[in-house]
Length: 447
Image 1 (cartoon, one colour):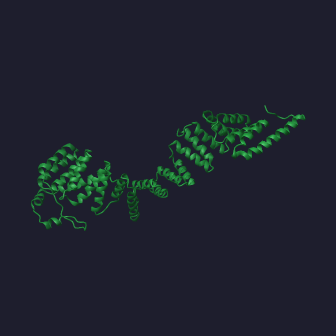
Image 2: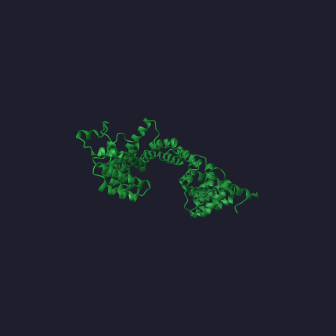
Image 3: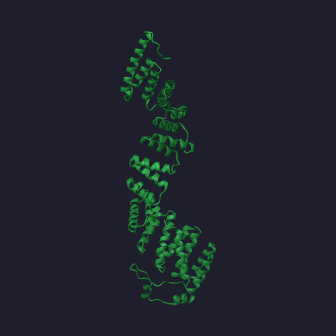
């Protein structure tokens, strides 16, 4: 939105120019009676015909010059008092009153008396004798103030009239009207205005303002037009490169189920130091693992934990442990998963830890971990816990116990075939070793 203060500064400057006329000129303009034809010549029509600029009379001019001094010193209360007095005594109705009201509107605005500023500016806009060009500019100012005070319906009404009156309709004004429509729930109309502005910008070979593009992105996002939102993000990243736009485009790729681009965009955000929330780091860790780069996930999480972005709680430690495990870094995975398992209310971390111990050939620890997993329960994959237990028992030569564990795993569809094969194997191996021991062989047995 164009800054209100800029508009007021322009309005004030035009007023000062009106007051710069010498007193004799005021007198001549004030004393002269105009015919109907002459008055018509002074009006500015849409076909480009212009009128001679009016000026206030000498008495009114002196009062306004005095007000200028108060304004320059920011003595707003005194300026307000003088202008109210001018309406009663020094300045006559019609054109002079219109100029006083325009000036008074600025004084109200400067004191943050926005409702009074709006009503006073509207008096100027509705004055038949007021300068037409200034009316149009002031109508835009009123719209800005109404928008600022959340009177979106009134602002939209003023902007619609402004668009009909203005010789040139600035793109900022269209965007402001679009924002009014958005706040009024007229989002399709808002989007049409924004798209028109973007088309005008392309035709003029000008870069759209960042705030315009952000507004367009919101409109596409809320309409779930994610491909178009990605297009806007690409422009933002080209013209106004910021980390937040990498986050946005990553989220849009996620919504479009383009996982690879989602991961790459979030990875670029991370590499630029743009991640600052725990959930962002965890999400990226899962994405790294999904694309088979678990070691990158582990290193990133370790760093984030050290920097305080990611808490070392049970859930996050499980993710870190899983990343190390999938990287085949079992020595790094085991202490992390041990921490997680001790914190956990369920047995999932213990079950994962059992698998890590088996890979390290630490079979006794694997057996204890798998027993703990099954004891705590709440397992996502109970079949794996029983498989780990059976594997550990078999490695410790407890073949009868292993056969029982594989039999338990066999009850689950996901492990049925593999568990049955292992069950047959340990039963046969147990029988074979029992015969060898019976014949005097010295073999390890279950402890």
